[in-house]
Image (cartoon, rainbow over all chains, first blue to last red; front, side, top):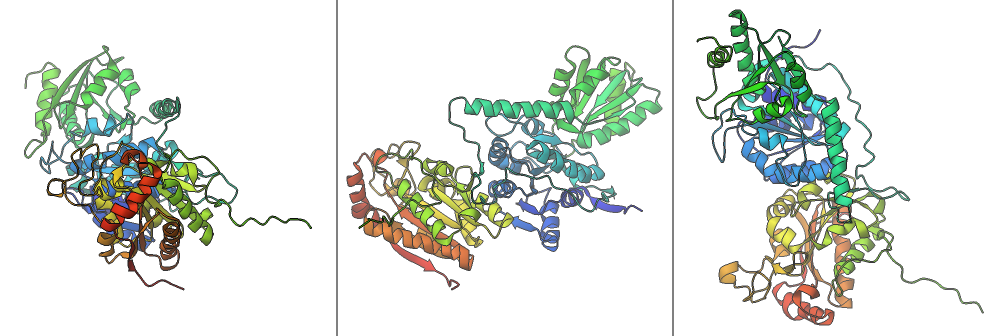
Length: 356
Length: 252
């Protein structure tokens, strides 16, 4: 029988990482993600792993870079202002084709902002964030179970494509407690990483992990190679959840905590006899653009809900081009700005042409 | 009578037989060689991982025949921490300039030393940012003119030169800290000896070891190589005294 646990989202993501074979964690405290380093500080030594509380987020992400360059499964975590500090290292990891997991338990900003749930880091996560033009694999859990499951998936995808992965969650998903059924697999088979620096055996060519390409045409070729991998990722690894799309007149779309609220609003709509569906992106990069295109064959209205002033809505619009009208409802994050299901239901009524 | 040639001097195995890109009179090549000789001395080429920093020394992998990971500006000690924690039985060293280590990377070097990471750090101090064109560094001497201290470094405005070897020696985690110079044959031989001791600290005693190497940047100093060597003796050494500032207990 599967074990059923009652844990916080932050603990679940740490448990998922350990189940994925991650034995190296480098981090720095920041609310609301500090449960993750605390969990790792407690559990990793028991597993023969390494926890280091770095002197800064910058040092932490560079320790991750070093451990990853040696072929190890390693991670760091932080919250929005701390993720900004990690962008330098993330750009270098992307340029150096290094895998690794970065968890962002988002809080509200910009600047110091507040510690409330936010989705205002969407652009930063999916458009590159750091300098130079690159993409991360970005997965957006909306439950404690997904915090665990997507941590496992993030490591697998990151290793397979040699692209750093980010779990983009928020302070509600990180802090809430729910049931979790851990994955029963005992042993994870880590792929052979023949590119990793581990000391050069006699007579063998050296291995170099780098992002500096100065020769004529070298950097362009490198960037095209990275781009081709992003395209491959888009073709193969887009993930989403679809509810009631078959007969939907209006499609709700949302990710993370907003999707949980949207699901409640969806139930209210269905109870009221409204033909509403939900398309929830699970991978934010690659964005499930084909799923949106497919949905617009039958449904011409999409309502995008976010805890910001409109970020993912741009990708929704790009995906559907002119095949559907895309509406937006969002609120900038901060204390008291988390929308209620009733609030989203009122929006559904509006776009279904029904009076509230 | 046949003449048997017995080589008494050869290139280090840990260096690749290539021509360097460094400017004429620059001593990175000398320091590279001393590090490679130390790796050969201990026979650890096959289990050494170099961590390259940003600046003139970034091309470490072009010259050393070892595995190398490149790090962002100033972050080499953090990257090396990740490498060493992942592979504790490997020999790991960073090779950093003064802008890299004493300015943007001050936090990383201090905390890495303070954690007592079993690494060897080679710190090449030529009192300027070489690759970016000779700007003021934390190690620039008082009165020294650079492209960003065109009237000479004024300690009242810019701070005084930082003595990293002495600073790091204060930390409990540091097991070995020294300053050497490569301006004369005598000093080069001594520098080689000290660099070997720094690697021995890692290999035997598994502690943090730091070697600051005073070296030239003739291009940005606007000097001939001979003048630049004289400047090390006349100006740098009086400000940055040579010596071993800390040596911990080493294994046999």
